[in-house]
Amino acid sequence: MEAIRPVSRTLLRDRAYLAIRDAIVAGEIEPGAVVRDAEFAELLGLSRAPVREAFSRLVDEGLLESKPQSYTRVTPVVAADVRDAAAVVGAMHELATRVAVPRLFAADVETMRSANERFAAAVRAGDVDAALDADDELHDVLVRVSGNRAAAATVARYTPLIRRLERRRFGEGGNCRSAGLHDRLIDACAAGDTDEAVTVTAEIWRGLAALADEPDRSETPPVTGPGTPPVTGPAASPATGPAASPATGSDAAPATTQSEGGLPADAAVDDVEPATGVDH
Image 1 (cartoon, rainbow, N blue to C red):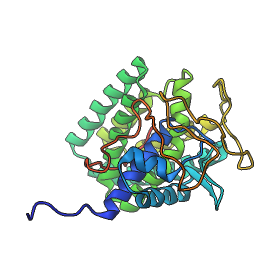
Image 2 (tube, rainbow, N blue to C red):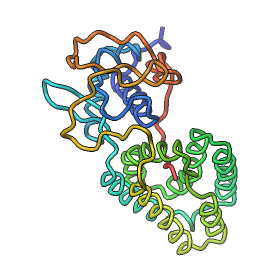
Image 3 (tube, rainbow, N blue to C red):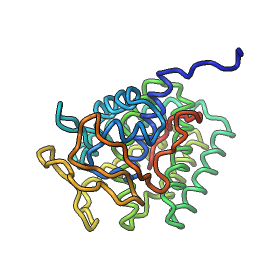
Image 4 (cartoon, rainbow, N blue to C red):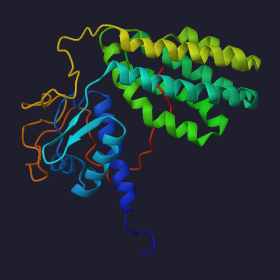
């Protein structure tokens, strides 16, 4: 049967990476929580090998940290890391905006306006997922039209570090950025005013970097340094994420619970595309 072919090992690794990354960014796996390959292999319906590869990639990207023969755990949200990531991602967006504005068609500008309308409505409704999805769509127009794949890859790599903090601030009652700045950006793009569009883009990302300096208003302060010992109890209740325990080896028992709206059990077979937009 020609239509039935083996699933690519690389594809399984990427699916594991996306599912675990998104759960960390959404807060379903909390900072400091120990993660185990056996547990996530069970949740994702995969073998341990692609999960281990996903863990390695997430360590490189700063969402996980690992101590050999001891533990792999979710990193804390560190203000300096968020500021650094925002500076890099903001620079990539400024570059993309400068290149993209002269190339935009009316349909591109209309896509941005429509996305901003959904963004503003989602912020008013307190729907963080819808707000960030709409924000991604808006800014992805400029990244896509610029055609700069290096900038797109950099944005995709470092945006999750920023998004974790954005989600937390939104949950604490923040307004998840200003649709008004988006309006100014879109108007500049429609007018073909590249300098103004770049200026507004820089303003958006300065505001996002400043988010890292706001006091944390959550009830339980996050882990703030690499010297803090790993979480030894459940990382989250069954409604928010898989349990974390002192057991850290790859032979640890698989988890028997799954978070509500958490890692998809069919992530190994459904086609998932990585998000490349940003959240501001």
